[in-house]
Amino acid sequence: MTAPSSFSVEQQILMIGARQWHRARHLRLPVQPCLHRQLARLGCEQLAPACDSLMRLSELLLGHPFRSGEGTILSEDEWRLLDLVEGREHALVHQCSAALARAFDHAVRSFTIMIAMAIDAGAGRNIASPAPSISPANA
Image (cartoon, rainbow, N blue to C red; front, side):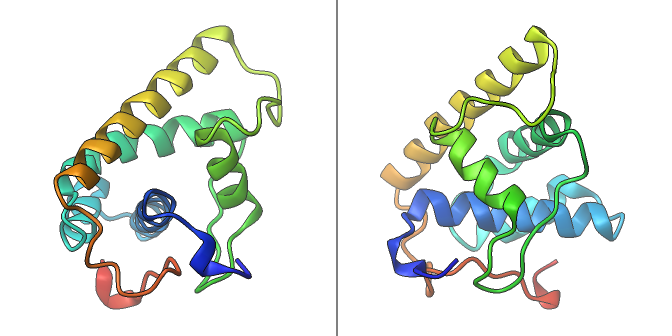
């Protein structure tokens, strides 16, 4: 990510959630409690189940385990997730069933609605840096 200031609060919350989800899965920690703790710091802990569903479906859609970037550098999977969530990419990496594509679409819609409601209620105001970051202490 070369221009972090150009990322919206919604995009930052999505990337923070995606990285925490990836980290918890990698460390074999319970995903939703880890997501809840991380997202609570941003005032949007209610997104934990929606984020978990979105990320699980995104792995199925991508056809491989989700790979996250580090610091201010986004991985190809993170860029693709942003594009898919924001409707900029419709071509899938591999063939998937219509049911999976619909489930992912519903997960995106649910996440989008919930994040908008959370931001309307004040979530994300305390994001100190526009760059997504997950430190080892955040799990």
